[in-house]
Length: 258
Image 1 (spheres, rainbow, N blue to C red):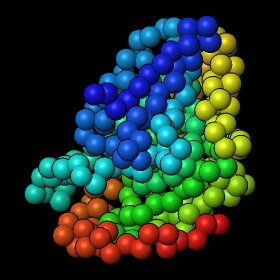
Image 2 (cartoon, rainbow, N blue to C red):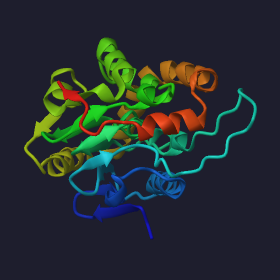
Image 3 (cartoon, rainbow, N blue to C red):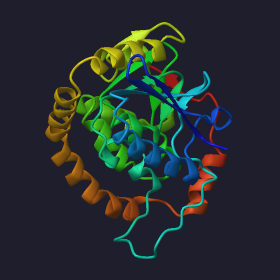
């Protein structure tokens, strides 16, 4: 059963890519990670698609990142880390068609691999952004690098360091520039599709060249940050059993929204 749904609108040139595991809050397991990479690669060769909307199924979450039930084998060397989320984004798969993310509900943790590679984000008022890594004894490395390019440094630092104690509301995300447009509940995907249709109506070469130029302004910083990430994760992460204990002891609803 597919975990990523793709619908193409031939009349507008827009493809809607939907993370389709609502029962798991659209968390990404290994099969879904492979599917996402395959979807982005396939869209490179589909000339009928000139812009993409990325969204999540259901009302509760865009995505909550890596599925905690996913078993990711790791080499014993601290110099090597196998992170299955590194290849789930469009830029990681050399797709330079514009991607607009439409966020409703929670977007946290590994969801930032996707949001960090979207060109801009539209959200409805139910959206909430946070990162749980530090609360569970894990270094937030790759996500921090990506989100520090999308929002003011102090806001990114606060979100990553406060862990599960705080969530950034959709309104706050809009005010700091993380979100470019705020809609009423349930309106994010339609608004993102409208934006995508506009871009799809322009000459594709000009649009894709602009996407590539914009990413180039961030690419060096992302590459430098990612180069350090495996070592920081290896040095700073608690053992898996300690992480599991912290996760089991979490307090539902024990956070504030700002």
